[in-house]
Image (cartoon, rainbow, N blue to C red; front, side, top):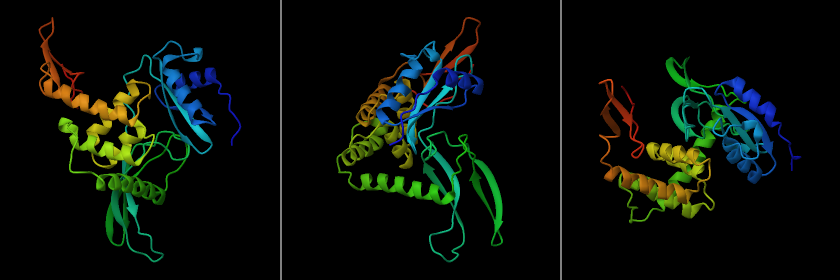
Length: 284
């Protein structure tokens, strides 16, 4: 059991301001409860004056080799940052598991967006072209901001484990599907996952939904989870998707996710409907 760590929040807040929207490791807590509590309180600056005023910082907790890490970023006065993705997808080399050379094939894998060692954000994919066996291939390379390096073998193992969890849950699906409109398949899978895994979190649910190909459902769950400072269970995610599907079906405020109106200066403006939360690009 690692020794308790007293985080230096004033120093962390300053480093986060200097990082200008980049994620900074705040502390590593020996218990998950302590880390989760800190991650919830930082955005609200609750009993943490270093992060005043409320809403100036974002935070999340993640598994760390020595406990639970809390990562922080400063967002005040900056363009609205992109929400944290529920998963990350990379193209990697798969050379098989045999001791003899089996050749190379390129596979796309979906894994956690967090570094498996410290919980920091994984890097963005950058295409890399290489030549082997008389053929040219393109894979992704990425650099994690935390400094830890992902090896293709480790990423493949992680992807297979996640895919197996999602596949086993899908195998147990009954004939009765959830009634959740366009999210019916996602909610049905989510309920199967809940039955197989106790204390399933919304964060983990979003990752497994993305692994199973329910990408929009995964993004919406992560979006809602972030807006509630992380206090969201898999059951909450289930109810949220059911409610969102119903809201979309009954919404009369927008046109396929866009609210169109004419501004005072005569210009026509389109904004994203907050009720439907569809993937659209607001424009003026």
